[in-house]
Amino acid sequence: ACSGAAAAPTANPGSGRRADLMIGFELNSDRLTPQGEAAAQVFARSLLMPELQGRRFRIEGHTDERGGRGINVPLSVRRAQRVADYLIARGVAPSRLETRGFGSSQPLPGRSATSPANRRVEAELIS
Image (cartoon, rainbow, N blue to C red):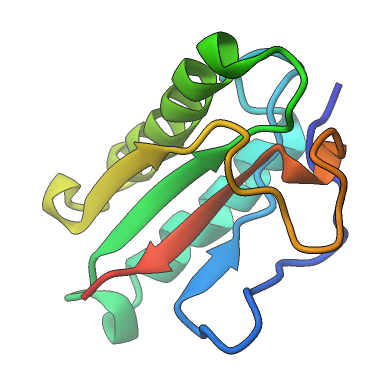
């Protein structure tokens, strides 16, 4: 099952520094779906473009509320790291990435805490 629910990348209003990467994972897993892998590939290519060469990003994993904190925080960490590993395997320097998992602590505005849309990986420009 794909965990992504939105149809296009979204940014938090007003931030301009954070984007939902639209990377889907198999349910209760850190394995990328085929669509999630395609989205990660697009992001990897973007990070290798000259305009972004010197920039650093935090890759953030999020989950919905189902499963509880003891499961969701480690799962969100593994998902963020899986995306970072994917980017590194495609030529992005590890020094340009850091990862963090938030579990279900940051649901999307206007969504219930159990919404599948909360199962996401975001990238934040940090420098």
